Length: 398
Image 1 (cartoon, rainbow, N blue to C red):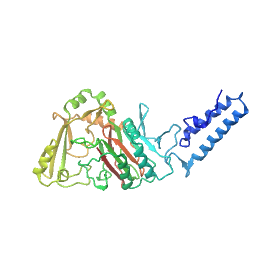
Image 2 (cartoon, rainbow, N blue to C red; image 1 turned 135 degrees about the horizontal axis):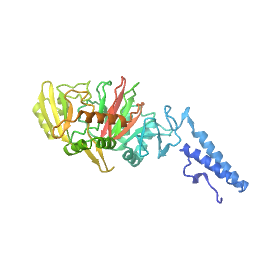
Image 3 (cartoon, rainbow, N blue to C red; image 1 turned 90 degrees about the vertical axis):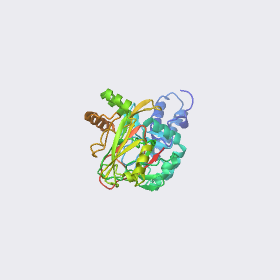
Image 4 (cartoon, rainbow, N blue to C red; image 1 turned 60 degrees about the vertical axis):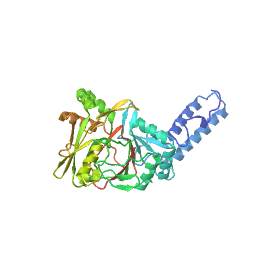
């Protein structure tokens, strides 16, 4: 073997990649064994490089009693990857579709202040993060120890530079700071079924951020599932009904009370939704977005639609399941959905959809400081019941 191999010529090596150091160590040991006929000087050069790599490994392996690249609740994997200033890690709850992890989980190996690092790195690596989000549909940022407050979370959201989407849905939410709102103020023991955010109105947010400020002692996960997987499985099981959904869309029915109901996941009153106490004004505002109101004792029935139930994702070139047809009916009487022509959805159709959603979803237990970024056109999300305390905040983007 001719020529000298230098440490910096092996692209998989470096102080930021212990995985590369380990691989480099064993490759250089193999090369050393192949140099039995070479001069002692060249063998000595290889020995020096081996010593350098071993020193890098020793200096970077541990920090504060745990693996430098992983949080203390995760196991270090031999096939983790480094992307720019992030480290992609693996957690047990992830699923894989065509070898692509869902969601992608990014952490850091930096010793600088975590919030500053995350915020500044997001600004400089936005094209990479957008590409990753497009590839996976969801990105979880974990292990940034100083992302602890709503203000920190707001800084992270602002760093992405997306335009703010003002929430006008039926869930009760309160502004916390800047662009940050409470995710849903219904009782924590209440579940929230799978849905895309704001699919029944004229405007739809493209991206959602969630932040765990207070992690629950148990439960309270935000399950996520890829919409195109749900569509493919429902299309395979019910081809004719799914075709009918594509043709006619869906009509949603929701009951809005006279007063806000903080115990309900969709507890905003019609006065809060339409920002008026005048019924005629509420009717005018509803009509502008294609909704009809039917007044009843104690509130109003709002009919929304027909709205598209199946959409085509041009950027990913597949169809997505863009409807909420399972779960809500079990929670709230007189709330439901029908085909766009008014015919009811069969019960077995709803139940199979719910089964697929639960079977395909990923439910990752929240850790304090977690930031979850979702592509709202690719991923449905839900909420599992928990016991207080639990505080998850949100921010919506156009």
